[in-house]
Length: 57
Image (cartoon, rainbow, N blue to C red):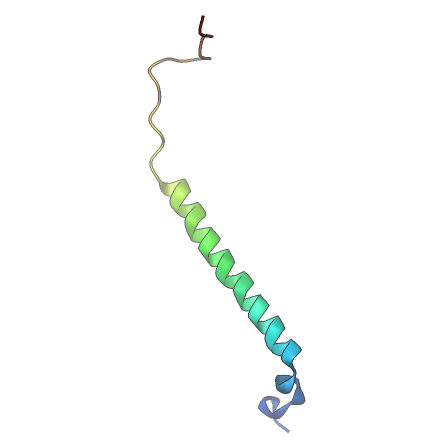
């Protein structure tokens, strides 16, 4: 019996586990790409003042 003929491939739970694992991998790759795009992006423009903003009266 070869690995491809094993009865595990006929079990629906095997395909569920493989699908969930693939989903986690895809989501991880997408999150990595989004985070790296944000990190590599330009810094937000700074305001002309330094320090805390004075309260409005």
